Image 1 (cartoon, rainbow, N blue to C red):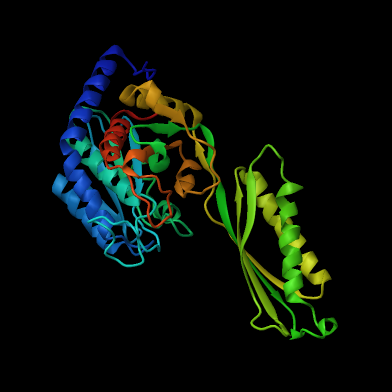
Image 2 (cartoon, helix red, strand yellow):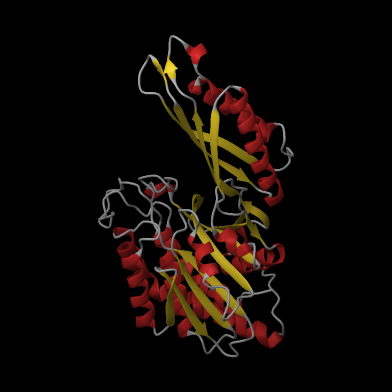
Length: 409
């Protein structure tokens, strides 16, 4: 049933004792942390503007007696030292920012910041890490090692708060040997978790094209370069980047999502703007594709008589779960929940800046089920009706605390 193998029989006994105590504390603290989640949900803040959220996190860590510091302006990093603090350093990460969405949920704790909403569950992630922190600090004399708590800003917006924290040294002093993160999954029933080893989520790069000519009268297209036509041809041609250059066994997506140009019926505009996204699961193919996009776009636009400005905003890398760490973590989850409640995460072309961490140290990014069809909690993330079954909070903070106390290769 439970495949995690501690270093010794004595350590095995300690592991199960700590795990059982963690479950008891998670249950005991559950109601308190549901209220914390509702407080966070009611006052969401956009990426890199999480000032009240940061202050709230700091106040809770102070209340729990946990040392912490501010990084990247609104990020908060705490440390909990157990016995023999240098034995292993385990990092636990939660993101804290919200999205520019007007909430439509009819709930008492709906967003009070109009046009801003925790529509991706970061309020839940933050609550779970705060809950795990309280549990771990309560049990710090019962486990070995150090737990680094990372409350990260700006996951929803380039360049990604993870990249900023890393530049400021979040993975140093002390340096974690592993890092864990979770994400709520509205397509997975509450009470379940899911895991995937290897490639988990795609890289995400933003594409910006500006096509320029002198413009002209729509009745005399031969006197100018038709920017509308050129942009249309370019959109079609860009589909070849993936369909005819990528290995078909390696998922990749290129989508043009915005076409801006023209303002009346009888004028060929002097400028057309396109925007889009490029996703890949392989870092080598990712940057090869950038070169193909540049070459194809430039040559096509120039051949049709116009000029091109192209900017590729390099975003988050792929999220890669260390295979051995993922297997160990999945085994811990099976022991925590029961094997029948642990599933395999589907491959996703969405992006997550957790990839910055997992490119540098072994990481495991897993999913927590929050769906409850009987309660009508079924909306996807990034929608104005997204919500979660709050019983997932007890499960989430219990599992995260277990990983903090026992995790590592």
